[in-house]
Length: 408
Image 1: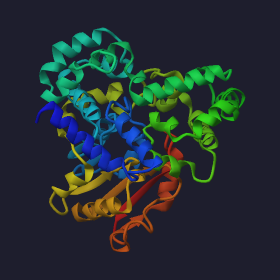
Image 2 (image 1 turned 120 degrees about the horizontal axis):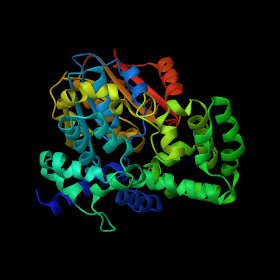
Image 3 (image 1 turned 90 degrees about the vertical axis):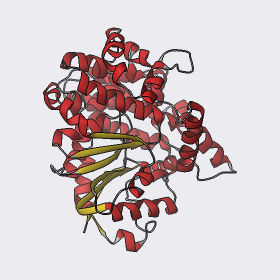
Image 4 (image 1 turned 60 degrees about the vertical axis):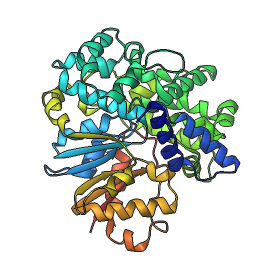
C-alpha cells in the first residue's frame, strides 16, 4: 500500500470511529479532533497498568487484546506472563511507537540504555542507539514514521533526544497547563517539592486548587477543544462534564492525582507535575521500565502482535472462543449504540470461559445498560464492587471509573 493510500485509509477509519454528527457544529468539532488525532497523541498511555493487571487476573494461557495507545501497558502486562498480547490501534503513530518499544526490548542488552531511551527520553545518545541497533530491525512503516519529519520539519526520532514525553498532543497539553498555571500565579511543578502526603494536600489546596477558579481557565475549559490535548473527543467531553462545569470536574480529578497517592509512587503525577519520571524505581515508571523487568522483557516481547487495525475488525477475524482478556481503554465513550452492540457481539462470540473485559469511562457510571442489548449484556456479570475498588486505586486519576465485566 502506498503512503498516500495508507493515509487515506487511516483518515477513513478514524473518521468512522469519531464522527457521530456530520453536518453540525458538533460535527465540525469532531472533524477537528479527527485531524489532530492522526499524529502522536500519547507518548505515555494514561491508564494504570498495575490496576489493570489486578482486574484482569492474567493467567499463563491468557490471550489479551488491548488498544495500543503509548504502549506502556501492553509491555507491562507481560509481567504477568500471558501467552499472547495482541495490540491494536487506529493511530499509526501509536503503532510505530509500540513497535519501536518492542524492537528495543529484544535488541538492547542493557537496562540503563533501554531506560535512557524510553524512561529519560532526552539524550542525543539515543539517536546513535536508534540508527545502529533499532532502525535495521523495524518494519518498513515504522521506520518511515520515525525517519520522517513532523510539521516543523524535524525528524520524529529526534524527540527521544530532546524530551519525548513533551511531544504529542498530551505532552503539548501538559506544557500548556504549566504555562497557564504560571500565568495564574502558581507553578504546577511546585507539587514535586512535597515529601509527604500531608504536604501534597497542603500544596494542592494552597497553590493548585485556586487556579480552577480563575476566569481564564474556566473560560477555556468551557470549550470542548480545550481538552483535545488529553485525547478527549467532543462526545467524551459531554460525558465527562455531565451537569457540572468542566473546570470543577478537572479540579476533582487533578486533586485525586495530586493528593490520593504518594507522588514518589505515582509516575502519572510525576509526568503531570514534573514532566518527567523521577527514577527507575517501582512506582516511578511503568512496570516495563523497571530494572527488574528487563530480565524477562526481551523474551516475552516476542509474544506481542502489534496491528494497525480497528478493534472490532480484529475480533471479527478471530475464531469463536479464542480470547479471554479484553482491554478497551476509554474507546466506548466515543461509540454510538450501533458500534457498541457490534463490539459486544464480537466480544461475546470470541470470549472463552473465564473471559474478562476491562474499560474506563469519563463519567462514573458504566455506559452499557440501556445501550447494549439485554441479550448481549446478559451474558456478562458486572463486577460493581471490584470496579469501585479498582477506581480508587487507579493512579492515573483522570477517568471517572474503571469497569470490569466477567463472562457468566
